[in-house]
Image (cartoon, rainbow, N blue to C red; front, side, top):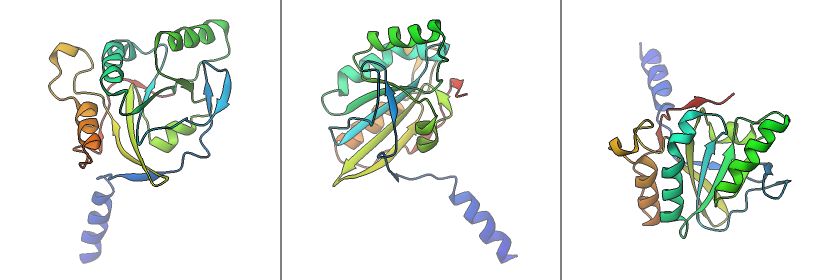
Length: 187
């Protein structure tokens, strides 16, 4: 009986994801603006990565919220966008990706091999990741939903990403490690 209890406790503990160290050195992304494969150019102690796409309706619903977050926290955190639904090399998809990159004042990357998706355990678009870097060590302190209402910005009750950023900026523990994102499944 005690073996079963230990087995159940071990499996339940895996559901509670805490901050985890990540190695960004091997992560190579296509920089849409520079048209080159690069590493994430992290310059600040806090990094926000927003996984998005060109064709998901949920991403369009979050555009204004993403702009507002970048405007509010851009001086304190690096912001990056990653297109995780890698477009095919057709002219239409490639043009849409470049056009989307131009409208954002945020460095925009394509995760061609879905390496970033695997590293950060991303499932949906849009989905956010918050990293902290101290003494050369990068830790993922949050990944998940931007807020609790993808359909209507006016009806948002809990701003997960904003709460995490407020706490991390004040050197406090993140109030959330993970919140399931609503959006388009990464394919």
